[in-house]
Amino acid sequence: MTDAEYSPVATDSPTKLSVEEIVKMSHTARKWEVFPGRNKFCCDGRIMMARQAGIFYFTCILIIGTCLLFFIFDCRYFVETYPSFGFVVPLAAGLLFIFVLSTLFRTSFSDPGVIPRSTPDEAADLERQIEVPSSCQPNYRPPPRVREVIIKGQMVKLKFCYTCKIFRPPRASHCSVCDNCVERFDHHCPWVGNCVGKRNYRYFYLFIMSLSVLCLFIFAVVVTHLVLRTQQTGQFLIALRDSPVSIIEAVVCFFSVWSILGLAGFHTYLVSSNQTTNEDIKGSFSSKRAQDNFNPFSQGSCIGNCCEIICGPEYPSLLDRRGFVVPDETPVQMSQPSDMYHNQSPKERNAVNVRHESYGSTVDSHAQVAAVKFSHEQPQKNYSNQNDYVVPPSALSSENPMPNNRLPPIRGGSLHSYQTLPTPTSP
Image (cartoon, rainbow, N blue to C red):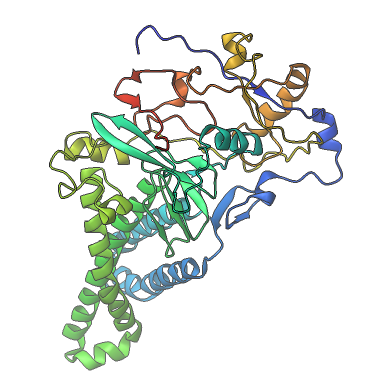
């Protein structure tokens, strides 16, 4: 697509509430309070986790408890016995401990990349677009709700989510535990109490790598501590009697480090090949499916893939968790094809109707409240032809060339390596 012109995407909200009226409401609900997914929120929506977080608490207790015992018994022994260089042991352990907890909490308490669900207007209009004529045949099965895009010459299918009422972008999947569609979905990890996706995968990878280093460090120091005590006392049993907690730490680290090292090695392979756990298990880019099958999201080298995932940009959250839920008294209307569409200007045809009282909106609370007065003065706009829309460049990225569900599709052709194929119809 050359010489493309982009039009700003406007939003229309039929509500008449002003900023002052929203603030003065006796009970103004936040969007996180009516979030449709199976998540729990803390600190007024700033912390987002899965509801089933029992194993996460066990992870915190195991890490913090083991490290506290290590600081109290083993580190004190090295500081008292070797005052000239013994302080290096607690210093290194403290830095590792802080880094492990920070990456763990960053993974557990953040939005993994949840895609907002479709608003009522968007869902109704999408149903109208993909509606197929009914057949009188008893064994007739409607075609699957799948769209196809081409990324770097590789065909990628976009599956329709019947829960979120959207066509999922490439690499996205619906988590059955949290009941959300997540961008670049890797897996749901009960040990961190959250999904692992586009926005927190790097912190999850840094967490398991640093945790494996911490386990090896504690195990090595504990074994050294017991060996030194054995040399001083002359008997191993006396050394165990003098420091019984050290053997508990050694056992915990010994049985934990194998699984952690295996997990770290597996995700190192995924990072170097720019794959997700979900894609690797399904064999999405395996040559067994087709000889010319390859990973279109790979940067072409291990270093490039590692730099993209670990050192790439921070992606903003699509959820306005702390935004206000603005009530709307007008009924939801499904857009109908009419001659009014052809009489509208290109800018009007590109407008998208977004109801901000629904959680599906990605407009933040400040922009939402500021647009109330302006949007109410604009007439209601409908659109019926999905091939006459344009999308601003900000809706696309190198990671996800598919526009998100809040915007209409691209008008014709391709942008860089992205192309759209026609939606399959019934025979």
